Image (cartoon, rainbow, N blue to C red; front, side, top):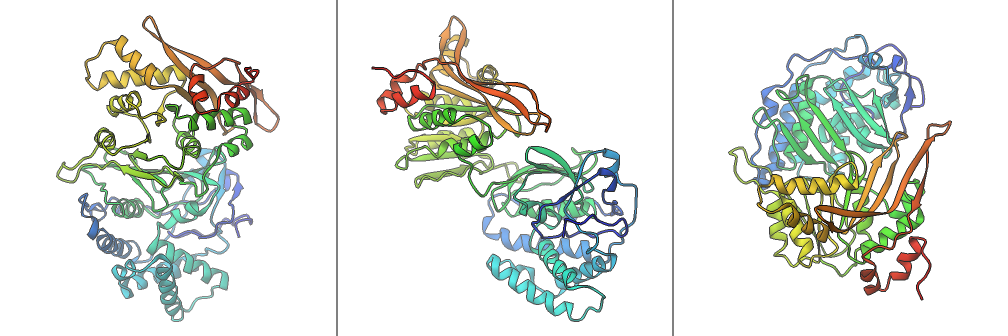
Length: 527
């Protein structure tokens, strides 16, 4: 369906195609026309506060909210109007997810009419009490009944598409559903209702998916955050949450977002990436993959460092595969997204304050509590504040094998950032003592980078060896150096082992992995 080049006539409504067929790439000049702006944007009905902690009543409130939003959005037919394409003005490549040959004006009219009638007929609160499969079956039956009373010259393909889109709009996240189902889309970036960018294979593209209005986008945002007991409104215009599949969700709305609501979704990968997959993606060498697996097994304290979108959490998941099945592991995150395969995993998640400004639970509080839960390892989703103090204490007091991620551009910056976070927390400690504690706690830094060709590569594997004078000392065990681009736009370069014997070799010997570790580094066997 998406392999055809869309026509230039007609415009679309709100719901999108539910097909998972890969979208077609088209020039920006052929991008989809915009829609008439709904003057009811940022409707206060879409900003109802949801107190944190009222978990047992969230489902019913979500259902009532969804019904109100759907009545507002589809109580009357939306008339699409042609306007100059903002996509063409951007001059970027556009990926097609819609088929305008199927989504004719008449099909859009029928779909919107069907949604309005469906909301009047069914009890959404009751629908939400059913399992996901039963919800969809019930909706399909109701849709089929309503379609019998609608006379319109529609093909069987259009009728099937209407059913899928109506279900997406009533039960799912509307226009986002095709993007969420596409396994090749890794990030979704919504820049107000009329611009939706995506990332595929490390590169960013503009999509032809849009929302009918800002109020429609706000309705979808509210639907997402209320289902996990969080809130977003003018008083609290920023939120971090997660989708039902675990994907990371962030939204910021007016008055902080000047042009309209902004949303970022980091999709949750259903299939965990292993270190072997990194080798296939040319992100590291087989020797580096084996080295990291051994470092995970022998319980080194590892910090994964990199910029935004470099794949830190994905790599942390891959290294965690090599944690022993008999170990008790506690994970602490702002928005839960780690996927550990071990049988003894305890997952903790922070909580924002309620509408009354109380009840907030921070990462530092969770780290302190985790230390009382007899953990073998503590895994922190990201170090970003004063929880770094307790993480360093845990690493220095018998909780070997702890893992964490941090935002920084190089191994040296990683150490400096940890030091700065401790200083910003207000803890009174001398610089020398602090650096000794950091160098004693952190044993390995793995640096990730998303490069020009869209691929993520491990650029450094760095061992922290101690302090000399007032300076923390590290040594590079592996590194990557780029050497230009090939004709297809792929980055050329090579990974290098520096042939240095790590200081943690006695620990590898304790776990009977010394010889394996030396082989990874390209060093001769000892004895």
